[in-house]
Structures are given as C-alpha cells and as structure tokens.
Length: 483
Ligand code: DUC
Ligand code: ZN
Ligand code: ZN
Ligand code: ZN
Image (cartoon, rainbow, N blue to C red; front, side):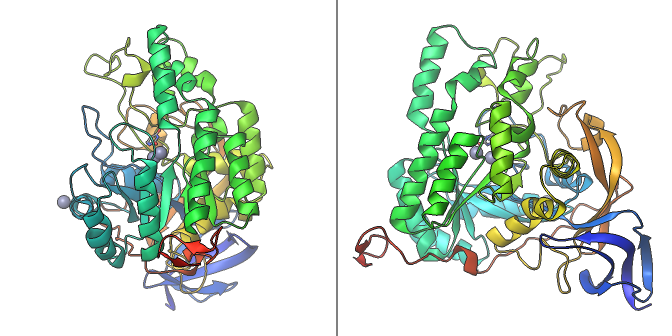
C-alpha cells in the first residue's frame, strides 16, 4: 500500500477552505490530499463525514495541584481521554510555581504527570512569585526548553501577583519571546464586594456572580491592555466573558496592539441564572469570571464573527461535587467563597461550539476550525505542525458525523469528574473517530488510545508574538533605551 492510512471520500475543512478530499497519512503525518489517492494499509470510509483538524484546547487544568483541600478530578489519562472524545488532540495545561518555590520544579513535576496523556500537550507556566532569580535564571532555560507561554493571575489569594510583578513578568516575556496569558479581574474590588455580601448574609452560589460583576473584569482587561501597550509586549486575555470586556479588547486591537482574547464554552451557553438552580445545584456552575447574560452571549458570538475573539477554550477545571454521602463535598450550606471555581468542559467544547455555532448558523465551518484549532496553534507556536490539515502536518484529525444528535451526560464526556454543567444539553454533530499523529485515540465514541501516546510539544520562537517595536512614548522601558 502507498499509505499507512487513507481517510476516503470525506469533506475536509480548514480555517480557510472546505473541499472534498481523501487524506493520505504515513508516519503520523498527512502526506497527500486529493481525490482518488492510492491504497492505504488501513482505510476509513468518511463518506458523509467531516474531516476536521483535531482541536487545540489551550486553557485546561488537568491533574493540577490546587493547594488546599480540593483536588482536580482528572489525571492526564482521564482528561486526555475526555478531550479526544470531543475531537481535541492537543491540550495546553499549566505547570505551577508555588510561592517561594521554583517554576523549574513545577515544570519537572508536571512533565512527569503528563507522561500519561493520550494526546499531545504543552504547558503555560503559572508564575505566582516572579522573583528576579526566577525571571532571570529559571525562565530563560525553560523558554529555551520549549515552554514559551506564561500565565499570571491578578486575582485569587493563593495565586495572584501585583501589578508591579505583572509588569516584571511582561518585561521578561518580551525579552525572552514568550506569550503571557492573563486572568484579569480586579482583586480588591472582588474582595470588597465579597466582604459586603458575607456581612449581609448573601452567601448562596448565585452571590458568586454578585461578587464578580462585569465591571470587575472590564476594568482589569482595560488595565492589562494598557500594560501591554506600555511595554510593547503581546498578551492573550483569558476567558473574556461578555460584551463589555470584549469591547476593551477590540479597542486595543484597533490601536494595533497584539492583544488577543479567548472566551470559553461556558460563557456562550451558561448564564448567571444557572448559579441559582434549586438546592445547592448552583455550586456546579461556579466559575470565574462568572457566567453572565444572554445578551453577553450574543455579544460574544458577534465578537467571534468579527475576529475580536479568536480562540475558544474549555478552562476545564473539574472538582467532584459529591462526598461519600452523595451530598456536596464542600457542604450544602457553604458560602460561595468556599465553592471551588471551575467547570469541566474538555469533551463538550467542540461539539457545543459546532452545534451552537455551525448548525445554528452563527458561524461557518472554517470559523469553527479556526476558533477551535488553527488560531490557538498559531498563537502558541504550534502551527503548521498542529491546527490544520495540510501536507506535512501531524495527522491530528477528528472525523465528525455532522448530523449525529447527542444528549450530553456525564457518561458521554468520559472524564473523571462526577457531574457536568452541560447535563441534558442537546447537540447536533459529534466526532466519531479521533486520530493523534495518525493513531486512533477514539473510535466510534470508544476511547482506544493508550495513556502515554501523547507527546510534549516544545515550542520554538515564532513570528506572531514578536513585539511590534512601537512604544507609546520616546522610551523603551523594558530595555531602558530610547525607543
Ligand atoms: N477560573 C479560573 O480562573 N481558573 C480555573 C477555573 C475557573 O473558573
Ligand atoms: Zn509517571
Ligand atoms: Zn483564569
Ligand atoms: Zn483557568
């Protein structure tokens, strides 16, 4: 046979094209496209199916130590299985620095955990304590080893850094050629709201959203865009949750800044009302930023169509709900401040976006491919190896039945959590087969890929995140020279 594998008679879509084609795969890579390709040692009939680039989920908390009593429900083996069930073939997770500790050690420990992944992976480096020796000694080595993105939190007591520290991280990122991703919410304002809510006895899950109204996010998005402008350094703002924050991103982009934004599945389909479900069910919807309104969802879709928001992730952050008695493990009278933040979403990200986006006519198929795979590949230095179907690319491919109707349940998503906030949600379109470098990880909805098939993806320097070379004034404050 001419090829290891031929996917025959499918409709291939990339971020720019939709075309009928076979896909010839040898040695884990796409080696030929076109109709009537020669024989494969193995063949998959994709008649009536969509042949799409495997998804890249560039914001996932998998097997991440959380500090404190709550644990991340997924291992890399379970999380990567769930991702593949939903057509995702690459995840970027987080290696974390403990305060007072070393980020190099956090990376080494996380590389060990991730060896059990069934799909390919990279890390963002969470910097919680960016001391000079971290920025000047550890980070240059780690970037050289292919960890070319950082994550900073401007809120959360255990993880946040100050604006002073954020500026030092951004300056280091500019010098090293790395991209910084930012959790942008106004910490002190959240704390002020929270103290007032607790004092007033307003402690239910829905009051989580009261502590973090949109102004908390909008202000901080504006602030980090200003920092990025002043230091001439590219950033990606994480989890833009509604219209007002997206407008700040758009303003920054209109000024020519390299400011990119992601939103997440949950902000397109969940609302603050979900936090007010009967009993303590609302706890399953607590994430940060908080889910917002239908109007915000409409604004986000519009910003996706305009290209202002280019990347949709899951922010997969699973915490099991039930303790031994089946009731909430964190106590059904727990104030919202004690409910772990985060919702799972690795498996549902692409099917929900396909169904809500493509099937409902909000976006076309190339836009779907772009927001789930291609843009993230470009933004994080993985393109063209990942994020597209082209000769020379890794054969990371999901074969979709675009008409398949699925009711989402915990059994469908196949992660190690005990609930999904999408329980009962109906979608049209689901991937049947997911290949990572030509090897099936999911076949007919069944996980067949072995833990350990996944590979670490080192990321070298790349054009997209080069600084513009334009400072707002006559001085370059990063290098201390005239601009
Ligand atoms: N928000 C985060 O910032 N991280 C994990 C989960 C969440 O909801
Ligand atoms: Zn191990
Ligand atoms: Zn975040
Ligand atoms: Zn997150």
